[in-house]
Image: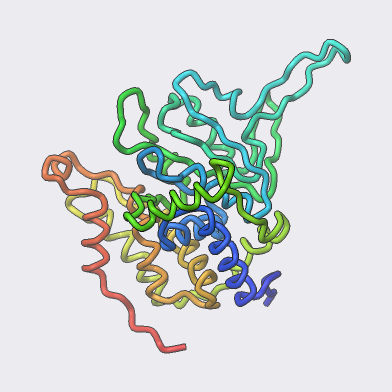
Length: 323
């Protein structure tokens, strides 16, 4: 059996350094940062849903800096065109030829800011990039940088002039999470940090480079998963499809993402195997945004979060041998 390019212990130590580096610039709880890093380590994309001003953009940029990756931000607006994301061919008068000008999607880390403000056609331009890590422009396919992942943000409160992400696009995100407001102590620390520096936006030190990130993303593939835990993941996914408040539950692809996120969390915790706590910890950010609740549930005030909590409480956790 082949081995991972980096040991689990070394990967966990690197993840800890990355988390510490970001924590030096972003005031938030560790669980949030771990969830974002879990999505990155799992080789997927992250959806951040929160009100403006909580630090979503800062978190994304600091993550890219800590990982030594190129970062681009795309501000999604109602008039944004697909070519504004992917790039387009422009006529060069000197060479009398059309040349391709890369769009902002050509970066390692792409922040799709307020993604739900762009129309569906523009949102769809991200689908191929997120799933295939490539874009097609005028019949030509171009590969995106490796590693590549998208961090998208959306405001859950302000809905006027927005376009809800379709189910197919939400399914492309490994996890969805929220930052939330810092507590009073955190806000005071935020002000103290601001008064101690001359620039409004803090920066973080690079911990690794792009090549190492690609190697880190391979480590979860070598994490073992007991058969009973695989059955547990399947039970969770199937329970969402059978719940009375759910019109469309977690897809088989969503269950695979649950497996991938569980493996990634195990690496962050320094283990070469998945534990039940890993599955339970990632179930909420992996499953919640994949659910479509019924009209009756919406009237009754039953949220997607409520559904996931009920399923986690009602599904038997397998007994595992102590390792």
